[in-house]
Image (cartoon, rainbow over all chains, first blue to last red; front, side, top):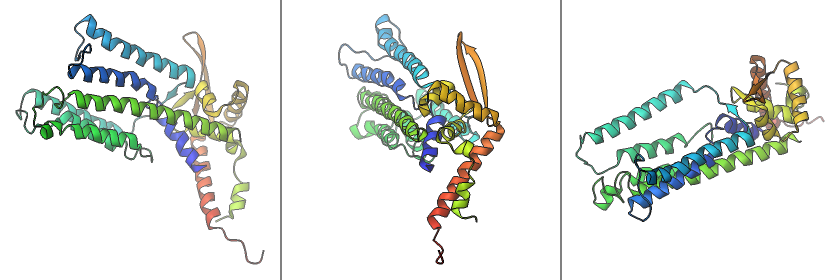
Amino acid sequence: MLDLRRRIQYVTANYGELQGLRLVPLGLFFFTQAAGKAGIEPWTAVTVPTSWAQTAVCAPALLLFVAIGIYYRRTFGNVSPPPASARSVLSGIVIFGSYVLGVTLDLIGWRNDWPPVSLLALLFGLRISTAHLVRDGRAQMHYVLLGGMLAGTSLLPLAAGVGLDDPIFGSGGAISTIVLGLLCIVGGVLDHLMLVRTFQHVRQHAHG
Amino acid sequence: MAEPFETLAGLDRLIHEPARLAILTALSACRSADFLYLQRLTGLTNGNLSSHLSKLAAAGLVQVDKRFVESKPNTQVALTEDGRAAIERHWQQLEELCGAARRWQPDEND
C-alpha cells in the first residue's frame, strides 16, 4: 500500500514528463538527422530549416508532438503540476547556464577544439543521468544508462582521433545524434508504460 | 503506542475507502487535476467518481471547480488545506501502523 502511495504521487507529480510518446517523433527526427550527417540519401541534416525540403523533415515531428499531446489530454486528462521547488529552479539555472557557457566558449574558439571532447554532450548526458538517478525516491535506470551513453559520446572525437567537427564522431555528429534519438524513443516508451501500468495498478486497488 | 489493531479501527473511513484514498493521494502531488484524470486513474464511472468527490467536498477535503473550457465542461479538483493535512496524517498513520504491525508480538497470556 505504501508503494501505491509513492507510485500515485510520482506519476501525478511527473505526469507531463511521463507523456513519453510525445518524444518518439523527436527521436525519429534525430535518427533522420544522424542519417543526414552520415551522408545517407535522401536524408539531410537540419539546424534551422531554410528550405521546403528541410521543413518537410521537421514538420511531421512537430505535428506529431502536438497531436500526441492532444491524445494524452483527451485520454488521460490534465494535471496542474506542483510548484517547482527552489532546489529544482536553482538546478535548472545552473544547468542552463552551463550549457550557454559551454556553447559560447566553443563558438568563440577559446580552446581551439582542444581537448577534442564535446562539452555539450558531456554536460547534457551527465545532467540526464544524475537527474534521473534518484528522483522522488525512484531511479529511472533507462535514463541513467542512456544519459551515460550520451556523455560517453563526448569522448568519441578523442577516441577516434578526429576533430569536433567530424560528421560521424564529432560534437553533434551522427553517433551522438543516434544516442539522442534512442534516449527519446526508449525513454519515452518506457515512461508511457510506467504511466499506463500505474493507472492499471491503481484501478485494481480502487475497486478493492 | 496504541496496539496496531486499535489504530486500524481508528482510521478515518472517509479517507481510507480505496477510491477516495487514491483520489486524495493523487491530488496531494499536484495543484489540481481534472475529472478525466481522476476517472482514468481510479477506473470509476462518472457517477461513482462524482459521488466520491461530493463526499470529499462535503467534508471540506477537496474543492471542486466546474467551468467551461473551449465550450466544453471541465471539472477541476484540488485539495483544500484541511484535505492536504488530512491525507498526510492518514498516510503517516498507515506507515506507523505498518511498523507497529511488523513489531507486534502476541501477549503470552492470550
